[in-house]
Image (tube, rainbow, N blue to C red):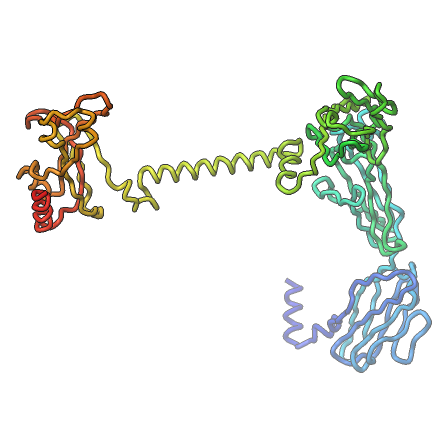
Length: 523
């Protein structure tokens, strides 16, 4: 209550609160980092003229500055006190100058001084990074594939704190394998240390590579310092796609079969050709083949070669088996050689990825999904074609369906929405009765008979049905043979059951029908 009453009294009397606490000081570069021996520049300003400019710098005495007052350590900087500027330059900053810097401004219209605070960081180079590794499964700094390694990197006593990055050789390590860095402050000299941990499941490809902890700081020569440890990972010979195919050999010339084996430690080598064993550094019993000593390519990779003095056609039909083994395991590699040139394009892709170990699970799933999709599309197209759906709905072959039954007639009428077919002329043909009655031979009868359309056979009820678009024709399906007797048309009574074929057509004009009928009668 007393504080509130005091504030109300100050407001009532019009007392200048800002004058009590001093004017607001505008400060440039509140935090500035420099290397030892570099200059540091600061600026404090207000919007009114200044009476004086007093600065306090760690390691130096308090100085009252203006354009006419400077020394070897600090000099005035700016357009003058009349412009409200109190700037200064610290020459050749030293470690003792590290800390908070103050500028105190005197203003004629204010009873209180105005103060601005800044921070000067004089960089100090941290110590070189330190790298610690956990022990392997054998309590040594030797690891096996699938071992989990834990590493810790610390960069001590830097100002400001250093930054840390991890690499395996030159490849950055994924952030998912790294912990959040921890910063430790040493308050006495304003120094900082940083620690970061790594957890990684080792792979065969990590063998022989350097695990690197790289620290970045302006105080380091070149701004960088690092420490590293080479990883020694034990594993047996790794499998490859089978068989290994080598191309481009020439009949009658020297041929060399090369296989790159990955293993650690170095494997023992043995070739097998047609059941004969050829150890590393020896020949076969004919002296035509030599198993050369494996050549170290580094990082657990070894080049194994079998030299054939003179390639023959028989050599291209053989299968060459390379066996590599060490304390961690063994592996067989089957090799086929050919005089054909090495395949390119899609053929090479399928040889390398479809037929070998490189063909990953994701690729298999992708191909299976693609094949199933193609089968589904083809099935849908066939279904639409058969049922006349979608884009096949306009196909006349699927718009009209005919049905047959054991009943007196089977009648299928098209829907009114379907298009009409062209006019169809239907004639019934029979053999020439006169020639049959004359007693001609059946064979000659088959060869000479001519069939004429019989329009008189169409009765009045049938003509009535023609107008309706329906005609019934009775067919006797008999396969003729040269020795079979001449078959005569069979006429059945109306009450007898038979099968009918329905032919749908668009009726022609009556005049055209009568003209066609007259022409047939004249014939």
